[in-house]
Image 1: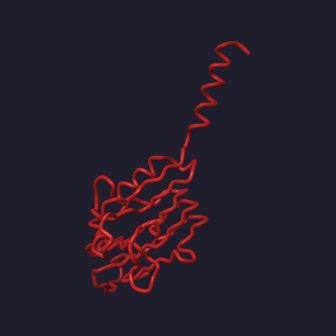
Image 2: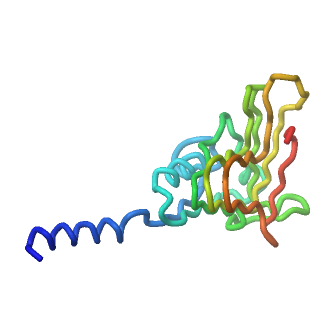
Image 3: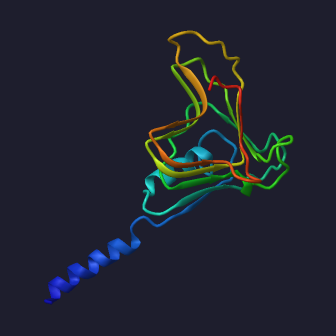
Length: 174
């Protein structure tokens, strides 16, 4: 093999080995957007690719219920493939009798689509220990759209909760 052939082979090997390295993103802010937020973690996980499994963990500094509540002002980015969102990593007491440790609160206007987490056309996703709740009172109006706590569409191998890592979803139409 010539020098140029070996160089091309070496470069291909480097790209294959380093492509899609799985990352861990830690949520350290309960703000809707900005550094250390769930919104940023979902965006970074999506940008990291889907070759290796990414993790979104939580370590919010205020362990009170208010400190572990994320009030969403708009729809979060879609969940990407090969991703684990694990709020059981958050220190603090569970909410009520559940095992959920981080609360996502939606209070959007009655738009066409109102979703806590959107899991669409992806695979290999796990979601643990989230308490997803909607504050807006829901009244069904035909043609107005739908409200869903977690929307799963055209996806494969999706895990929602496990023993000791349950989720709570309340206040939504579906």
